[in-house]
Image (cartoon, rainbow, N blue to C red; front, side, top):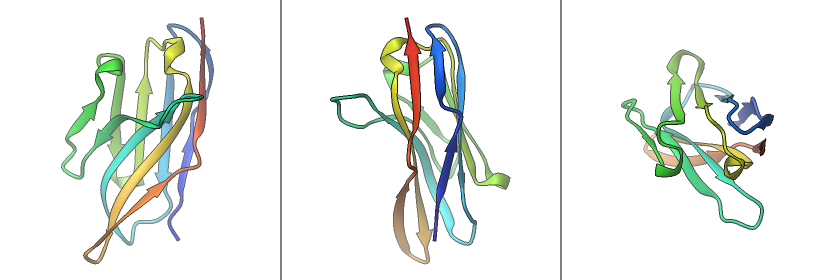
Length: 119
């Protein structure tokens, strides 16, 4: 059974920083992409940043220059460093992973960690 354990959420004032971490529970499968999505109240879940198996990274325009995604292969962990946070960054942040079990690609989500940015 695969689990994604998220940590690092919290409440900060605008301009502050937080670092989120997401650790996958085991490594007997082949991890492909890992990513962070977020969902604000009343809005759809949206991609924030992604890192591929080849360590290529992508962040959406609204967080470019402020957020950085990285991963530690040795720990099966993905991080999201969030700087210069804005109130509009508030929401529930979900970790995402897809992984190969043999030739089958499966997707997994974490439970979410709350980020609240006050003005």
